[in-house]
Figure 1 (tube, rainbow, N blue to C red):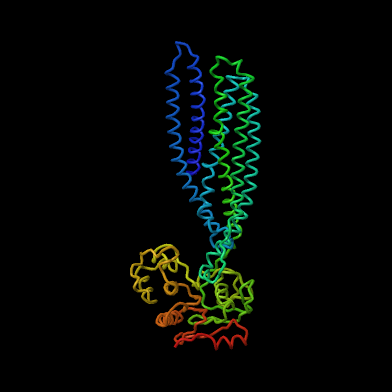
Figure 2: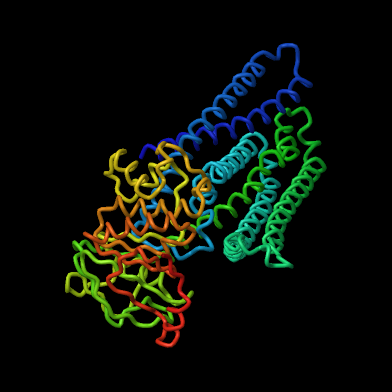
Length: 513
C-alpha cells in the first residue's frame, strides 16, 4: 500500500511537472504576442509573476516527482524480486536461457515502467486535452485543424506502439537464444585454448531488431513533425488574417512549433515499453518453466532403492540399501550417471523406480534430512562464514572454525573475510574442502558427496578420508568418486558400469595408498 501511495504521488507530480512546463510555453507565447500589441495600460508585471511562479512550481514538482519516484522504484523493485524469489522457492530453475538477467537488469525494467512510460504518456495525453480546451474556449475556429492533427498523431502513435510490441516479442526470442549460447560459451572457458577458431555468440539479430525499434521511433517523430508543420502552415494561410490583433492566436502555432518537445517524449518512451515487454516476458517464463520440488521431512535412518535411476538418463537401474552408520562408494566411468544418481536419491531431480525411506515408499521430493555436496561446491559471493552457515544456520563461530581446522583450512581463521565473487579467491581444492566442511557442520543424516578427492593432494585426501570415516560412524554417507583412497573405510561399493566395463574400470581406477 505504501508503494502505491508513493506511485500515485510521483505520477501526479510528474503530470503536474509536464503540464506546468506546457503551460509556461503557452502563457509565455501569449505574453510575448500580447506585449507586442498591448496598450499603455497593459499590466506586464502580472504575467511575469505568473510565469515565474509556474517555473518554481515546475522545478519543485520535478524534484519531488523524482524523489518519490525513486522511492517507489526501489520499493517496487524489492517487491518484484521478492515475488520472483517466492515463486521460485522449492523449485528447480530450468530456464537457463532467461535466468541470467531476470533478477537484476530485467526486474529494474519492470519496476521502472510506471515512471519511464506511464507517467510520460499520461502527461502527453493531458497536455493534448489542455491544448484542445484552450482552442475550443479562446480560438474555436482552430479546433478542427487540431482535431485533424491529433487524429493523425494518434494513428502514428498507435502504429508505433503495435510495431514496438511486435519487435519486443522478437527481441525477447533472440535474447533468450543468445543468452543460452552466452552461458554455454562462458562455461566452456577452460577449453577455449583447444578451439582454434573460437567464435563467441553473435549479437547481430538482436542489434538489427534494436535498430529497427530506433528507426521506427525516429520515423514516428519525423512524421509527427511533418504533420505539425503542415497543420501550422494551413492555420497561418487560412486563419491568420481573421485573428490579427488577437494575442491568443499565437498559442496554437507555438504549441505546434514545439511539438517535438512535448509529444516527442511520448514517442521516445516507446523504447522503455519494448524493454518492459522483454523483461516481463522473461521473468514470467523463468517462473513458468521452473520445476516445483516438494519437501519431505522423514528422519532418515535407512534408504533402499530398486529399479532406481534418474529420469531421462541412460544410466543403469540401481538396487541397493544404505543404512545409518555406513559409507557406500559409487563408482563408474565418466558420464555413467554418478552425480545424477546422488541428486535423484536426495530428491533434487526426478527419478524413476522405488526409493524407500525407513522402509516406507516415498513420493518424489527433496529430503530435508539430506545434504548433497556438489562436484564443484558452489560459493556465495559473500563471507566465509555465510558460505558455511548455509549447511547449518545455527552453528556457532567456534563450530565453524573447528570444521575448517578439521578439513585443513585452519589458516582461514577470519571467517568474516569476503571470499570474492563466486568464491574466486578459493582454489579448486579449497572449494572441495569447503564442501567437506559443510558436510561436517550439517545435521542431516544422509550425506551425499560428489567427487570429494578430486583436485586434492595426498595429504588432503588423507584428511578428507578421516573426516568421511568419522561422519560414517553416525550417518549415511554416499560418496561418488573415480579416486578410491585406501584409507577410505568402504562398507559397500556400487558400480554404474556394465559388468565388462566395470572390470576394466576397476583395473583403471586411481587408488591411493
